[in-house]
Length: 615
Image (cartoon, rainbow, N blue to C red; front, side):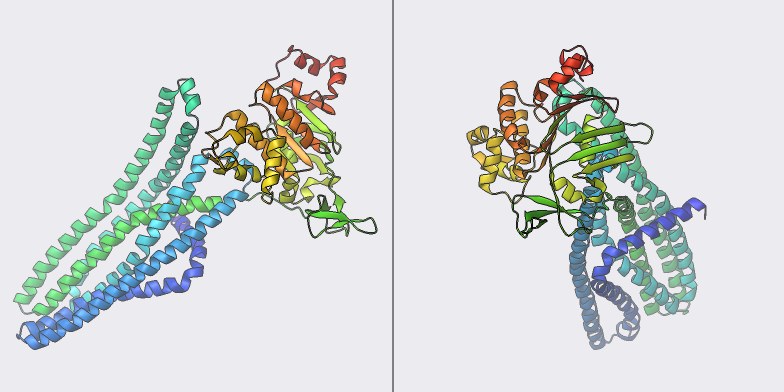
C-alpha cells in the first residue's frame, strides 16, 4: 500500500473516531439497534438453512403435516425478523435526528465563536454548505447506512459459515469471487472518495458564488456583468460537474460489477451443484439451501456497495465539518467583567444587585469596582491584517470621557481599523489599548463589547418586526424605551407611517425599507443600548442632507456625556468634534479641533477645501 493510500485510510479512521463523540450519548440505543439489526440478519440465515431439512424431511417424503408445521415455524421466525427491522429503523431515525441536532448545535456554536478573520477568509456560501450539504449527507448516511451495513455484515459472515457447513468445494469458488468483489469495492472507494471530497468543496464554492450574485443583483444589472458572471458560474459549475461525474462514475460501477460477478458465481455453483446431486454427492435439500445462501450472500454485498457511496460522501462531509470545529475560536483570556454599580455608604464604588444606571469593571484583584467612564487610549499600537503589511504603525491617541473624536483620511488610512481594534475584533501586534486604564485584553470580550455600541456604514437588519430590530441593541428594553430610541434617531416618524407601525415585519435585510430608513433603525438600535461609548462608522452615509440634520440633532442627545468615535467622509459632520484626527497610511498626521486644523493649513485644510481627495 502506497503512503498516500495509508494516509487516506488513516484520515477516514481518524474522522470516524472524532465522530464517535456524537454517538457516545446514544451508545446504549445504538447497541440495541445493532442487536436488532443482527437479529434481522440471523433470521434470514436461519430461514435459509432450515430449507435443507424442510425439503429433505417433509417435501421429498411428502409429509404434508410436517411441512405445515415447518411453514408455521418459518412464519414466526420471519415475523420476528420483520419486527426487529421495524423497531431498529424507528430507533435509528430517532437517534439520527438527535445526533444531527447536536452536530448542528456544536457547529453553529463554534462558527459563532470564530474570529472575524475566519469570515474574511471564507465565503458565506461555503460556510452555509456546512449546515446544508455536509450535514445532509451525514444524516442520509446515518439513516440509510448504519442498520443496513450491520445487517449486511451479519448476513455475509453468517452466509459464509453456513456455506462452508453445507459444501466446502463450492464455497471455495464463492470465496474467490468474494475476494474479487472486495478488491473492486476497495479500489473504487479509494478513488471515488477523493472526488467526493472535491465535490463537497466545489459545491460550497458554487453556493457561495450564487449567493453573492443573488445579493448583488442590482449592481450586476447596473454594470451589465450578466455575461461575465455567467462565465464565472460556468467555470465553477463545470468543476462541480467533473468532480461529481468522476465520483459517481467510480462509485456507480461497483454495483453492476458486483451483480455481474454474483450472477457468474450463482451460475457456476448451480451447475456444479446440479452435477453433484445427479452423482449423489449431495442431496437436493443441501443444494437448494446452498443456492439460497449464494443469492443471499450477493444481496448484502450489493447493499454494502450501494451504501459505500453515501458513506464516502458522509465521511467527506465529516472531514469538512471537523476542519471547522477544530479551527481555533476567538481568543478571550479576559477576566475583568462588567457589572451594575452603586456607591455604598462609605463612598466606595461597589457591585449592585440590580441595574442602577451605572456600570463598573469588576476585577478579581480588587474589592471595589472601577467606574466605567469611557476613557479610551492607544499606546504605540501596531497592527496589520496580515504580517506582510502594516495598517497602523505606532498609533497614539486618546479619547477622554464625554469627548467626541472624529477620524478623517483617505480610504485605507486606517480609520475603520481603529474602530475594529477598540471592539477587539482583531488582535494588535504591538502596543496597548486601554479602557478606563485597563488593558482591553484583560477585559472579557462579551463585557467589553457590551459597553460599546456600533453603527456601521453597511447596516444589517434581521428578520422580525421593527421593534425586534431596535431591541436587538438591548433585549431587556421596554416598548417605551424602544420608541424613545426611535424618536432620538428620528426614526419614529417614518415608522409610524408604515402600515403596521412598529410591528411591521422586516425581511431580506430590510428590502422593504429605503437605505436611509435602515440606517435610522441601526442608529435607534445603538441608542437603545445606552452605552458609555458610541462608535459611528459612516453612520449617516445613506441619509439625505435634510434627514442627516434631524439625525444629528437626535444623535447630539444620544452622545451627551458619552465618549464618541466618528468616521465620516463628509467633513461637515465633524465640525463639533472635540478632536479631529487626520490619518494617513497608518499614522496620525494631525490632531485638533476643526478651527485649529483649518488654521494649520495642512492636510485637513486641503481635504476640507477639496484640494485633496478624501476617498
